[in-house]
Each structure stands twice: as structure tokens, then as C-alpha cells.
Image 1 (cartoon, rainbow, N blue to C red):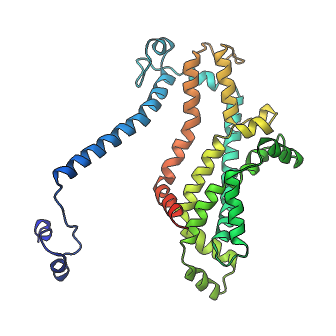
Image 2: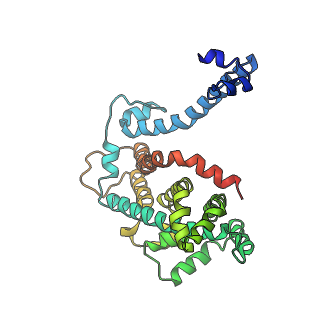
Image 3: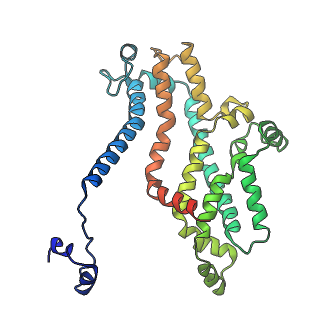
Length: 313
């Protein structure tokens, strides 16, 4: 039996002869076709509005100085050149800054996920004493914070100045991320925890052996949030790091842009100093590429993790 005849049957007839598995087709009305066309057109326009500026930045980073001055929009340059990237990577401080940013991002993300998941799991349990008060205090920090000066005093008093821990611990737990993960944990049935405890599992055993394996979409999503935050960290390095050897990539790239704007360089390995415009474009590409590489690995968890964590609770 073909699918054309199946679609003409009623629900009861399809159940009776076992063809209920086929999806019934519905013919679109003229209004439905127009809506699909309009919806698809708007999505394409929105996608191009997001993609074309990035392609312009990428094209200008490889373009020659003359082409950049003549054209305001470049996707595929007429002549490819790597002068801008050679200039940015000419000094040894840039590879060191990239290494610092990678360490801060990896260590910070692992620490943040560990403490955020522990706190979220505890606050997702209804039997926790004082749960409402703690949740209120967490939400309160999203509305009001101590500010820059109290944060600087705390970091300084703890002896974390000129230390990579100053870039990690102050932003270790995000209230927003914790709430998303808490709501995700709340959706896990209590019967799983009760069954595990009847088998002799402890609270930590339930958390690590049952809750975390079931929460991979939420963990992957929140990990991406934390990784982007650590990778793009700028203000914390400006406030807490005075040693140039410990500056992350964002600070060093800003220095590169300033040097290029002033047409000065401290490296003798660069024969041609490219214009400041192409250097800025190369800096943007270098800063964006790591997150573009990481995103496809967690993209399949992204929508599911955010939606479940945002509508439940």
C-alpha cells in the first residue's frame, strides 16, 4: 500500500490495518504557502544580515591595503595577503596570550561547571532546608551587585592580584546559568533518586552516577556559556592583572590594534606594516575562531538544554 492511499484514511482505519506509522499529509492552503514563503524569506534575510558582516571582516583581513582603501565591502579579495596576520603574530606575546586565554577558559569552565552543577542540584531538591531563601538571594544578585570597587578589594585581600585565579574565581558561578541548570535538574523524576538511595547510593553517588549523565544537554549548553565568558574576559584582566606576561589574548590584541593605529611595531620580523583596518579585522578573526570551532560540538545540545532549563521551574 502506498503512502498516497494511507493519507486518505481516517485515524481509526489507519490503526486497524497497521498503517498508523505514516504521517498524514495535509495540503497547504494559499495562505499557508504564502506564510511559508514569507517566513523563509525573513529567515534568509536575517541569516545574511548576520553572515555578511563576518564575511566582510574575513575578506578584509586577507585583502591588500590598496583594495581596502578602494572598496568598503569585500568578501573575496582580488589578491590574498597574510601581512595582517604576520603583523599580529609577529611578537611572542601573542602566542603566550593565547596560551593564557586557553588555560583560563579550560580551567575556568571546568571549575564553573563543577560548582554550578553542585549548587543547582542542591537547590533543585524540594527537601533542602532554606531552599527558598537561598534561591531568593541568588536572584537578588542578578538585580543588585556590590560593584567594581568591592570586587577589587575582595580580590586584593585574598591575594589573587597578578594571578590567573583572579580571572577565574570571581566569575566562577553565574546566577543565570545556575538557574537554568537548576530548572533542568528539577525535571529529573524524584523516583530515580529514591530508587538509587534504596540500592545504597549516597547523595554524591546519585549526583555523579545518575543526575550528571542525564544532564549532558544542560551541561554542554552552560559549558559553552562559561567558555565564551572566559574567552572574552577583558575587564577582569584590566583590573587585576598588572604583569604583561599574564595578560590574556583580549588585552594583548588590544595592544596590537593600538600599535597598528600608531603605525609602530616592536618586532623586526615584519617587513611591511599593514593598515590599521586590516589589523583590526585580523584581530577579530583570531578572537572569534576558537569559539567557532567549539560551537559545532555542543550545538546539538544547545536548544534542548536552554529550552528545558528555561520553561521548567
